Length: 95
Image (tube, rainbow, N blue to C red; front, side, top):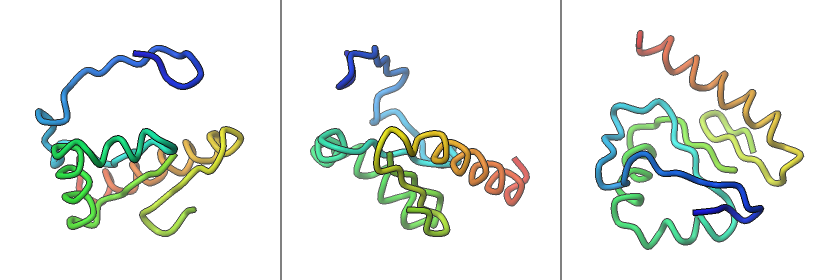
């Protein structure tokens, strides 16, 4: 599979096989990909779990536990904030 700009994308695990508790953050792609994910019940289950557990959710606006990127130029800042959030989460849980 290739992304919008031709970069290869390889899935290492199906949504149905993902156990959310084993992950620190959820990154949701922007654009049509986010809408397409709403059709996958397993992907929705994962997103709902992260929201209900108040786990960090990332979209590709920094609002506490939600960090978003609106355009490619935002990606460096997005990744910095994502890493900070994941580190805070790991420090808080001792993982």
